[in-house]
Image (tube, rainbow over all chains, first blue to last red; front, side, top):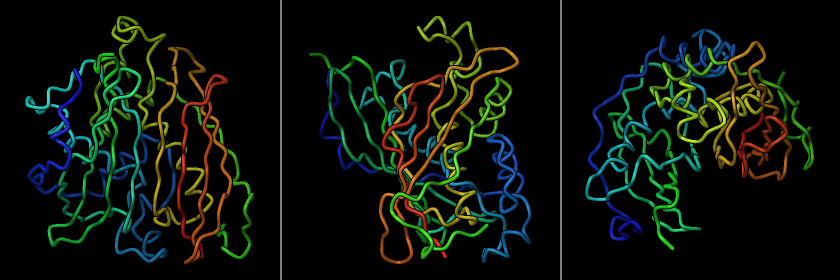
Length: 150
Length: 140
């Protein structure tokens, strides 16, 4: 059954603050095998004009995927998560995430579509500091295969 | 290396890179990202749900492709937008070779504010694994 269109625009409460640590950034950079010094060495990051080490461009998925689970597992929406694959991902940055940031994610439902028998759910996560500075927006599209009927 | 906006034209190619992926990389990525879906580390589970083998996290592939952008730009914080569509999985066998992801990129447009639009291509096992892989990067 197709997902309920009335969920489009629905906004979920901001997530608790996530404090970005230098060692978490290093762990993530190690996991993607990227030796870039801007992710490990505060002096290298300062030379680029940042106050502390910065995170790789895809690091915000650590926060935004967890936040998006509010929608994906919302029992009212009824997405069949066993059939879900990650279809698309996009980030729009105001600045890079950096060590010391305290970030919350406010998730909303951007769009709900059906295509070729699949349900496509796009969520938007606005990632902001505790002071209200928007750092980036993450858009994720989940595809539930074969759940939209014919 | 620092790339300057004035030195870049539409069609300028970014240095291509090939990234190896072995099972250990997926285990590390699962831990670092918090995505413990067993299709990314458990062959028994992956094949039971119809996959040919364990597959890489789409976000792992997206992260590798981004390295072509960030290594070229010099400043990883210069990436202003980055999006992809996941088309096919990167299948990672449990052997010494694992899989490889081949990434190329080129400038498609020069934008105002010293920014450029870039299209990336990512292939593994002869198949395109990312589509609509596009970024906007600010140059010096």
